[in-house]
Amino acid sequence: SGQKNTDTRLETLKWINRAVEYDPDSVEALVSRARFYRIAPELPNMTKEQTQAAALAELEKADKLGTDNPQLRLALSKEWQQRGELEKALAEIEAADKLGEEVLAEHFFDISQWKVARFIQLADLYLKTGKIEQGVTLADDTLAKLTEDRFRVRVLPLAIQTYATARNAEK
Image (cartoon, rainbow, N blue to C red):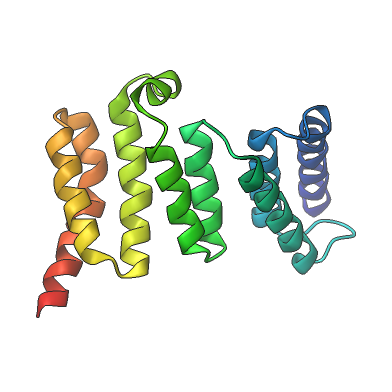
């Protein structure tokens, strides 16, 4: 089973590498490889430190290239957050916020999907960086904009956590 898992990981990496070789400036391929390196438990001929360094190199290249795809900005934000680079994670959301409604509509079937994804990532970052007041404002604004229950239910757990954290901070 261990060898099979290693073979599967190597095959996955081979396909991701092909994507990067085909288009070295593909932010999507670079983010995919960075995520793969981050979550890969072990790779033959690479220590954990080497895979983490490789993940960082991929993220830095993707960041330098930039993208107008808000889904990739969210993915970059999550990867930076996983590395503990919370300001870089916030910067990715800020960059996505500047894209405009037309660009967002190209990448999300329903703009509410963007609002939910943005809220989940940003509220988590606000909690982790101690920006509780901004988190409360974000929760208020997001809940006011999301009118359908199917979207509201996805943000409520983190909104409640944000409100509870703010209340505890007041005490």
